[in-house]
Image: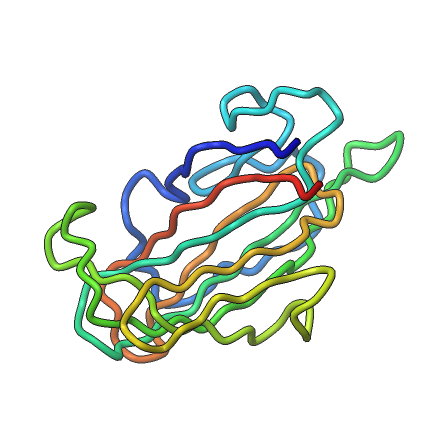
Amino acid sequence: MSLCLPLKLALAANSTATAFVAKIPKITEPSGVGVFDLTSQAVGVGAGVKTPGWIEIIPFATTTDNATFAMKLWGWSQVEKSSLWIPEELAHLTCTLGTSAGTAIAADTLMVDTIVVTKGPAESGPFRLVVSPADDTQASYAMHLRGTRYIEFDFDSTAAGAVSMNAYWRLFTLE
């Protein structure tokens, strides 16, 4: 039996960031825009210390066909018996927009049709799956979360022109 949760927005409002935000260990729990506690009922699980091990990401942006942007998925883990939180860069993706309209999401929105993993698990297999058709149909990225408690989405439009960026995401299990 598999866990199937609805898609959620990574950010309440699309990002127009032109650089990634540096992540360093910190003494406070992660919080803010694009940060999610995977043990929270707000993400649809609420299992305390158990969370689904996998995430699917479906990126989109506003601009034109073949424009690119980058996104990172961070994981945050707490050091045992302390208040220290350590960030882990789980994935760094380069996303290229296709012509598939996402206008049901917002005007001028296009779906990503190509995803290149810049940093993260290096091959399809037990820890990731890239669906990157590069034919103007929707791309997605699925990966293992490596036991992190919090995830954080970060975007960078400087690659080549995406105006505003976001993604849908969901947790799931493999049985």
